[in-house]
Amino acid sequence: PELFTSAANLVFIPDLFHFWLSGQVAIEATIASTSQIIDVQTRRWSVPLLEQLAIPVSIFSPPRDPGTVLGPIRPALAAATGLPTDLQVVLPPSHDTASAVAAVPATDTKSWCYLSSGTWSLLGAEIAAPCLTTAAREAMFTNELGVGGKIRFLKNIAGLWLIQELRRDLAAAGEQFDYAQLTQLAEKTPAFRSIVDANSPSFQNPGGIRGKISTLCQQTSQPVPDSPGAFARCCLESLAAAYRKTFRTLSQVLSRDFEVVHIVGGGGKNRLLCQMTADALNRTVIVGPLEATAIGNGLVQAMAMRRISNLQQLRQLVAASVELQTYLPRDPERWDTGFRNDGALT
Image (cartoon, rainbow, N blue to C red; front, side):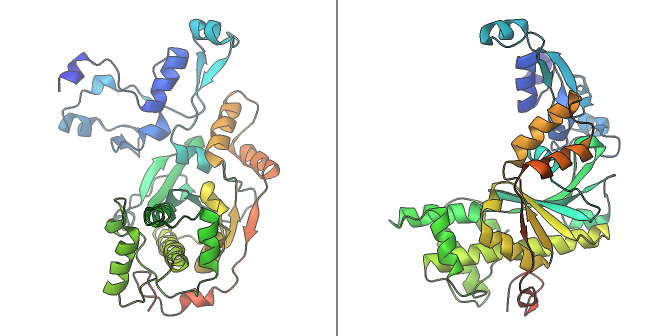
């Protein structure tokens, strides 16, 4: 508690870097919206909640929109680095997913949603106003702030952490595989033998993932994977099943049908998972950019400096600049056969 009496301002880690660069104290809105103390309707700090938590309101400055120009870099920094003294410091979307969603190359009129795919996955839609229904709360979707006044309505899902853990587990047993090799082995393994809950709490802590998968398979009366390829296949199909379940819930909660799913982030490198996603969701999947966070961050700064007119033009620029991969559903009916409500296959 004594920290509050000596503190003048609260800043998040990205804001601290902006302060070091510019000397200006500012809290950027997208990172602030992950704090759970933003009122998503007013898009300002929830004063009643802060007071209930006995946190002084005085240390919170109003959130600033991504794309705000803070001013020139500090003169001492310019002198030390040789950078121009009039170089401007701009607030990007400081939350990595906010920057990634800004770079989604959606350029036509088709209804779309996004899947930010990496160590973790975030599946959601860009909406104009927060969705605060009971169904949204019970499905554990969040309303986070985005670029251009938009809301990133999304849910966190397990991601390629499962494959990372599998690779680490195999390496500890003396079996060395890179990610491409594991994917190739999974591709050669029969489909739909074992699908588990990719969001199982047992996966949240590192270590022993093969044992955890085996236990979940036994609990659901499914064959236990018996090779690196079978474990990799289980991980990837379980992820696609989780995407399918979340996608359907997203559509139901928002009462919207999404024709296209945009996958951004490094997980788009896994072609097998991308095809599984197209099949499991029975939707067109467009993959790219892989470095969406860095691209969105930089282009929102360009928009702030009036090099780009608006978010629509930003996305058109991304679509014209980045090689995109399109995956069409090949055999979606196989994913409809025998599904239980929990996403596993009977």
